[in-house]
Length: 250
Image (cartoon, rainbow, N blue to C red; front, top):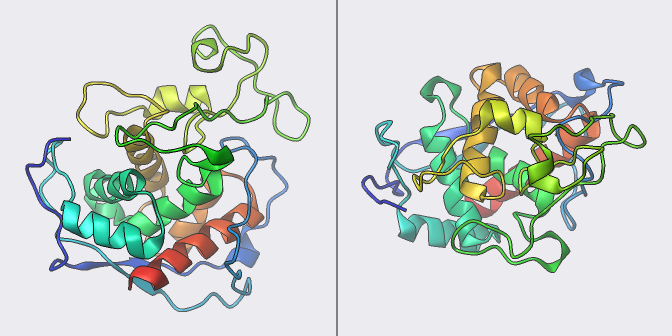
């Protein structure tokens, strides 16, 4: 990681917006994300009315330099307070900085998704390494039309999961290979775009979510997360985790 800009404590703040979950009910099957779990020990807020916005500590936003990075002191302190592995915390913060400025996505939103998807790359007793990779690759179940939408494998996608018949979501942010092909990005400046690297996957997720516009607007935030996984329960679970991280680090 090249540290040419610092994200420190003395900068501005970003709002983790509230969201109206009841309006987000949908009958569509999950497409981008596969199996997810409610964050243990976190009590979900009532679906409506949504709680007041939580304020998230964010550091000074640097320029759009691709080498922009995060103040390691801030990252360590925030990771410890939030209970998030340091490589994941750094990835979420960097992604919030490098995402489109007008989107104003907070690291807590990415952390909420990262927890629900893969427990920040540690699901199944995995360890998240300093290089952003889990000790074992994370693959979702076959997207064979059973519990999840049917997504046939392609010649390109087989290289990620090895299943010649059906696709699987891949990596800590659980991208379907076709979605990754569209949104792939090098999030840490190592010259590679790898969905198994939490740095790359977090920035790709941020860019994907930012299609919905300014995420400090409740409707946009809900729409963005619902677009990531077409499930109102999923939106609620991500909000619950993200709101808890904001509270722990506020």
